Image (tube, rainbow, N blue to C red; front, side):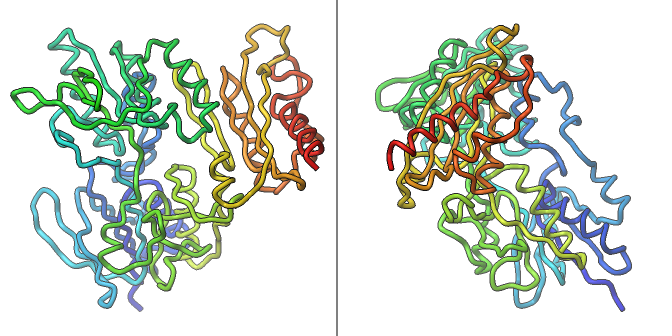
Length: 462
């Protein structure tokens, strides 16, 4: 019998994880695998791009987990600079286009994996497509930005950067450009940077950014990208002011890249992400699968579908898809919304629901905020941190945790992530047997201090 054919659209985390896992389950004489990637790179860490641009990661290739040649050596036909342009569901085929040559062909499939990722938000502003305006979603994007930065640094004395947006990408790119010696301005329409935190916690990020020399303009929407007589970006404008720049970086977040799926009539959720079942199969289609930044996932705390673009989820989705196509069985139950980042020496983390999220789904809750240190106060190097915890009224079930602080703060959010997944109450959390020694933690870990305070608030509210 002829082998089945698995076609993968997208050659990064989900797509190549799915291809590699399927290959582990089935040899080439049973399953032919064709993967299409429109860019120059595959199987890379997009999350590492800001650190490569900023100089902490010295070489681009350090971000590449597996080269196209390595995939091909495992009987995966990875076709670089090849773009999928149409999906014919009835004919079970995909139209592909060679980006360089412009030639097209139809490729039939028995199993189709959509791993098209996400695209940076680019609002329809005057000048948004001008040279000097950069997104940082792909390794190609990162290389293009780095080429411009290095040229600017060699040919001009001006080193001014404007970051549009104060979310994860915005603050990470602000750090990257500060590290390169740029004067950095972050223009954000929100009341505080990091809208993935509650405003009171975002205020701590703003305070720290100002202390690092990063100008942060809050409550200001960009209305135009200003250009010079050659048409190159020279700054941004808001309703009240102009901010000059030699380079403009967009950090406005991302949206699911589902244009192909939409055109094919596949089911999309409110966020625009593809809707899948627990096995990562597109709903209503037995042989079509999807994962990563182009899908919605279930938030286990709110019970609602949500779009979360994160490499950890993308790799897990790919493993699950590959196992299922290969004849095994795996499922993805959902997420609790954990994320961690940093700007210079400030660590920023959250998991679960923010106050506005809890209110939006009809939950009643109490909140507490505590101050603590990363180590025993008397041990050298102890850094302060603030922990905010949200718990459901009456039941005391943990709903969310946010942490902002120095070294040792960020990864403590994993304690809360496990507690959320287990649907623990804050009172149950106080009994967790966490590791203790003065170099690592106070006697009461900062997360447990917050859990104790939240327990008292829940009891007082009953």
